[in-house]
Image 1 (cartoon, rainbow, N blue to C red):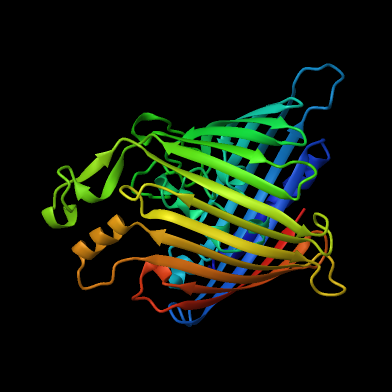
Image 2: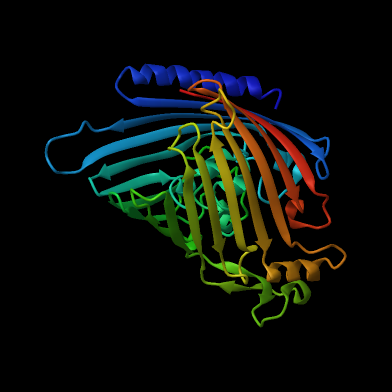
Length: 407
């Protein structure tokens, strides 16, 4: 990381300069730089250290509103740069990923799309990120552990985490809104963003390789949102389907454990799951001092073809908890991921001397200090039970410190 950080910062400086010039031509330009340091305090990964950086440059164009009733149009493009290694890869080995900005060192073409919009619908096409639109919670955005973002019941059970950070997927997204009531949206995406069944990030390192369909299949997700204007509670319910072939996690073609028979696993023709999220503004106004947000989200998937058969996360965020700090956010969260019993049985058969995976659980305490409208500093503490899903690993205590600047 030491030799790459200067190069990383130089690239980010170049993107910022180019973005400021583009802004003069009428584009809405954005730039984010995030630096994160972490250290293992006890248990698994004790004494380990990691340093990583993320830079995102983006530009968005929106058509000037017109008087006619037809649709308006917009376009978006972004470039992502990642440098360094995060705690999961460097020393922790957890399953859920303690940092949601950990990814493969690269500079890549990131999300880009064209969009047609109307008063009650929008249609978007391009290289899309489902984790920015589906199965999200407002409170989850205040946490650093990946389990509170793109949920593990989706990321662990789709091919190479699905259309999410840090590799978008070619696809389409349709959204229909009912003002004051809610919305419905659906997305169809390429089934393997890495273009690699083995998950090799080097194959699509720069985000310019586009291969669709075939044995990669398609990832399809649909979500309904109920958010009445006068109600402080919001509900989301969704289902997903992946049309690629998925190996059984325990059995061969005749129903016997393949870890023992050494035969090929039974192949399922698809994969699927469902989820539900509940959010509530407990007190206060949105983004104002005194606001308390709570959320609960959970999902399930078939135990015969997935590493995780269920997972959930819950959290509370309090804006302006401390006197004189109206924009700071204090957060407390719990995430739990349960390994499929069949997956565990296969692991036991393959290695009887080692404990089979059972679950991984995270308790996270975080405090975001709003230094200014554009700068923030976030100290974060995570207690991770059964890192990697194994009772054989000591529970870990990890400290992270994240600094972010946005323009």
